[in-house]
Image (tube, rainbow, N blue to C red; front, top):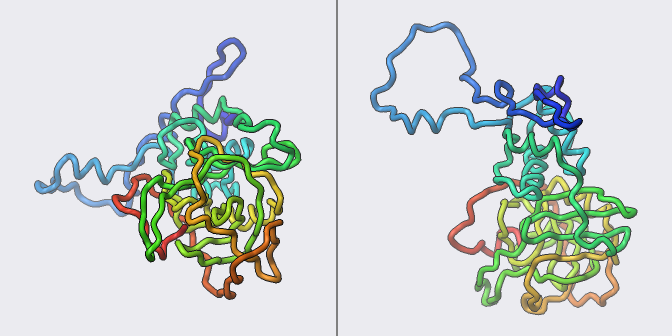
Length: 315
C-alpha cells in the first residue's frame, strides 16, 4: 500500500482495511512557476476561458513531475511487477508506460498519468491473475482485449508490459494485402534476432517470432490501442530485457484474439549466425544485414489514426 507519509495519501481504516482518499493537494493542479515579482496585468481580451483551460496543469502526476510522491507510485507499481524503469522519483517515459499498463489491466482511462483513481486503485491492487495458470512455469501471456503482456518466470509473474497488437484493419502495401490481425492461440517462441530487423512491413527491434512472421518486438511507437500489422509491439525500454529473459521454445499464449491465418503465411526469418537464438523450424529467408541504426525511444498515443501505417513504420 502507498505509504501515507511519503505519498501524502490520507487513509482511514474501515474494518481493518485502509482506504485511500483523494490526493487533494498532492495531485491538485499546480499553479504556474513563480518568477520575479511583476505588477498585476489585465487578462488578454482575446484569451477565451477554453484557451485558459487548455494551458492549465492536468490533474495528477505526469511526465516531468518529480519528488517523493512519484517515488512512492513507482515503488508500488514495481511491487506489482509493472516496469517503471528506475525508481528515482522522476516521472519519465518508463513511469508513464508502467502507469499505462496498470490502467489497461484495471480498466481505467489510458492517460499515463497517476491521477486520484490510479493511486486509489494502486493502494488496493494485487498482481493480475494468470490467464493460463497451467501454461508452464516459464511462459508469455498476451491479453489482446486489455493490450498487455504478462511474463512468467519460474511460475511467478515477472513483468507486466503494455503492448500494441494487430489493428484489425485491411491494408495493401507493396502489392501485398491482408488483415492486420494477431491470431489467438497457443504457440512457442522460435527464431530470435538481436537488434534491428527489417521485415516486409516495417522495423522490428529484438524480435521473438512465435507464429510464422508474427513476433513480439520493440517499437518506437506503442500506442494505447491496437495499431500493428499483426505483431505484438512492446516499448523499446523493455525489448532488450525481454529478449534476454525469454528463450526459444517458451510457450506464448495469445488470449482474446481471432483465429486467423498468419499474414501471407510468412515464415519466421533466419537468425543471424551470432547474437541470436534460432527456433526449431528451418529458416527460409536470408538473415538481415548488420545495422548501425541508433535505437529510438518509444512514444505512446491514445487516438487511433484514420489510416493504416506505411511500410516504413513499425510492424
